[in-house]
Amino acid sequence: MRILVTGGAGFIGSHYVRTLLDGGYPGCENARVTVLDKLTYAGCRENLPATHPRLDFVRGDVCDGPLLRDLLPGHDAVVHFAAESHVDRSVESAAEFIRTNVGGTQTLLDACLTAGVGRVVQVSTDEVYGSIEEGSWTEEHPLLPNSPYAASKAAADLIARSYWRTHGLDLSITRCSNNYGPYQHPEKLIPLFVTNLLEGLPVPLYGDGRNVREWLHVDDHCRAIHLVLTKGSAGEIYHVGGGNARTNRALTDRLLHLCGADASMVRRVADRKGHDLRYALDETKIRDELGYAPRVTFDQGLADTVAWYADNRAWWTAHKRPPSAG
Ligand code: NAD
Image (cartoon, rainbow, N blue to C red; front, top):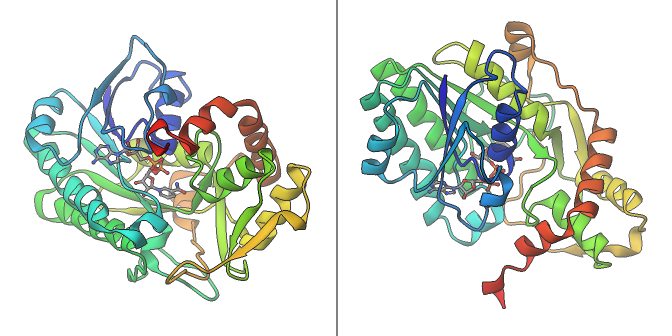
């Protein structure tokens, strides 16, 4: 089996690729992997093995049709992670989100059709549904994205679905809650707070901290994606939630504790524009139909993640303060 992984040098994509190459997905121990990644500020070649006999790395853009048409023939499957992924950046400027997340998905899927790729997974997010005060979303819930990031992912999901419906492309969509784990860029909440605390700096908490997110370890998310790739049905959407709902305030308290700090390190900052209050996914479908269950407990996963950042200062320092930032 030969799998093309877009965005495979980013946080979640690189975890998927490392696990695949390590033989972590039974039945795919000999899979060959091609990573296509533009290496934006979020992607890093060092997140992947420098050399591996079953890995090919291609630096390139998912919006580059001719490149994709050259690259895709011979691949059996595509897992599409590549995206601009940070909500705050999309609030500042949305153009790159629309170009990569929407245009890139359409360009990639066209190339998949031309090359006759047998299976595609579009990796998406719970944010496409907007915000929910109580209860949880099923896969049938209407899309009502609030941020430009979420809107670009919702648009990509609809394009992906249309390529299944119109062209018969064998494609499934996963929608996951917030991920955490090693190699996550320090602009995101958990690594930002942990690395600030490791540096003795305060942590910026949005608004009153009562926004609720579900947290899932990246290893569980990647296992779910691989399950959908190998066992999911065409045209179907699968939620991957994890069920660890926490307010940002409660999560902050936990991180303070794990880093040996106290509430004096918290700085309240103006809330994010249009900040969604609560996300909650119903993941009955992937559990019942594909037998998925998360394995990493939140307490253990979070403690391991804090330990990883403590042990990998050089990695996150380079990302937090790239040389061009002065
Ligand atoms: P990330 O920002 O860490 O990585 C994105 C990767 O895509 C980077 O390596 C980057 O270089 C690459 N990329 C960006 N633009 C590209 C382009 N035009 N062409 C080729 N490569 C490009 O993101 P992540 O957190 O790993 O998220 C991966 C996917 O999972 C995204 O599609 C995101 O929407 C989705 N997702 C993320 C989360 C989360 O909590 N992080 C939750 C649910 C879904």
